[in-house]
Image (cartoon, rainbow over all chains, first blue to last red; front, side):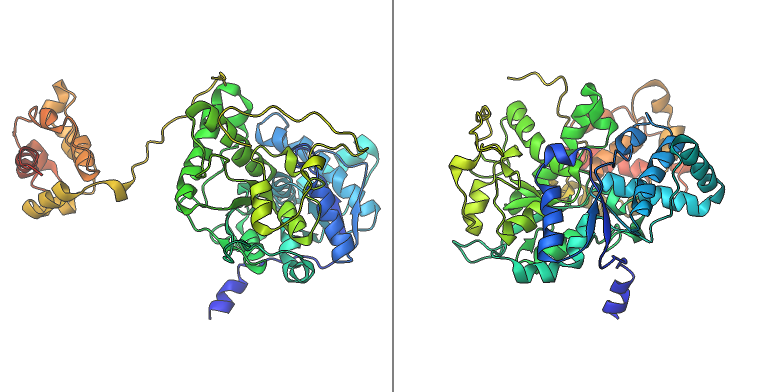
Length: 351
Length: 110
């Protein structure tokens, strides 16, 4: 009975041949994550995934802040689908949760309103003489990693276990709102019981922290952040979450959304500056990882190649807990081997 | 300190786990009809004292439920015990008895 019930909460995730769409903001915030995802699929899982250099924004942030009108978003999304069609792919994998929400929404709109689909085809053809097919499957990269979590677990060198105590690491998982709160049946576990990250954590040896504000928004909220005076709403939301998880003493936070990972990480610095408050005992803050970084670390990828030094809350203490080796001298080394200047240290948040 | 141009707001939510409901439970025991209240606000809408002061039986009632007793003894003095609220209450809550018992419970030591 329980299994039959749970089946309703599963989504179809394609097994192979993906068209990858990169995120605008993830490449800046977490520069190693997308590369790590492609590497995992190609090298660890031997899957076919295409990464087109001509891709562009999905307009997600502009769309959700009412700067970009719906018709423009539809045409831009159609152009991205036309790139997929041109290369003969049918399984679309957008890197960003907001993009995932936008693509799902546009496809759903076209299914409900075929006249808008025709209009979009016309607009796209007039604009750039391109045509497109709708994807057969849209899956977020976290869906894909979740789909292959046991295959990846077999190849992992490390587990989410504290090597000093032998106990599972306590992990807070945070799902981006646009992953399943817009269209619940498009997410693993729907909006009520999202399992996409919890499934990875459990499969890789960790323990999921179930805290009161687990499903609360991270605070990004687009308009809450984009106007400076409104950012109090954003940071207050994040503070509420951090205060709620603090008593459980999580070892780290993992998120599948660029905005969530960014704000749960960076607002820890802001709160430390404004209120002299940090959310771990020693004053270092709680590290925030993307799911690709979490998977990459366990697979034995170099932490600095994954881009962990770009985060606000530094991850060395977490690496020590898992037992992942790293060279501190390489932390600020550029791709051509130059040692770059280390960033300034914050006053209240230890690094 | 760095000036960020915005402030962190304190949430207005109440954590009921950290509130003592001893007085509220005592009130429910003494005025059993209070349990029937569904906070429609008819009492406040019809209240004569409400017309001329900031007295609001619904607000007092909500504060009592949340264990927030600050300023309630002063607020309760504004009630004239006319009983119009009791007449209009669709759930038959004995509001006059409720006010008197609230005053007594607030005077009693915890």
